[in-house]
Image 1 (cartoon, rainbow, N blue to C red):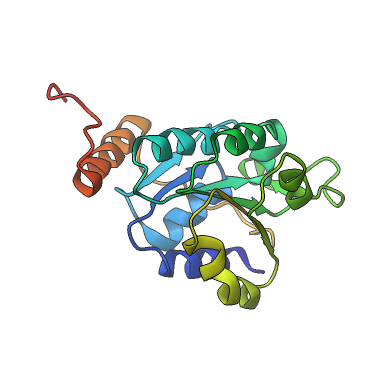
Image 2 (image 1 turned 45 degrees about the horizontal axis):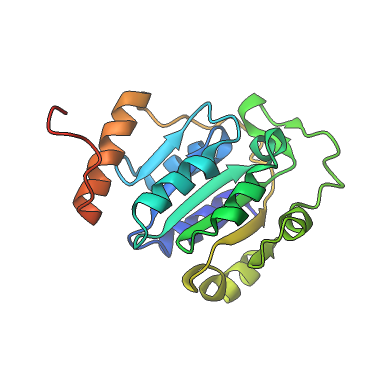
Length: 198
């Protein structure tokens, strides 16, 4: 499915979910589609740790859904993230793996073993029970509710086409993203993120 169409649909279904995006096309496409500067942590230079960062957030605000978007380029750096996610088994964590079989941060250089990597099978192999795979927008729309609205840690594979161009990065530096996102969590959940000195 087309990357932008996929993100546009998912964004249209978002209500109060906190969003974490990994470096490269995930962050850049989410910004292009939503221009959300508060409820999203654009984890640039995430080096495959977006879902671990998201797990920490999900643990801290257990009543709030947390959506994490990782590219498959990031995933290849640390597939062990799935073992930690499974062990934590956070019911409010939904991990989207956006697979376009390339490194979006480096102008879509092809991934090693790209055509053979079966990310859904990897998730099942570590014991994750709620695994969904979508390569067509129609099937994503049809099964969105069962995949995203039911409680339980969930791994969702999104097979998308390559973008074919370099997208613009979100126009914010790390400290600004941190404070905007932290303040958003405080307003949304009432959970203190920063002490009063900030």
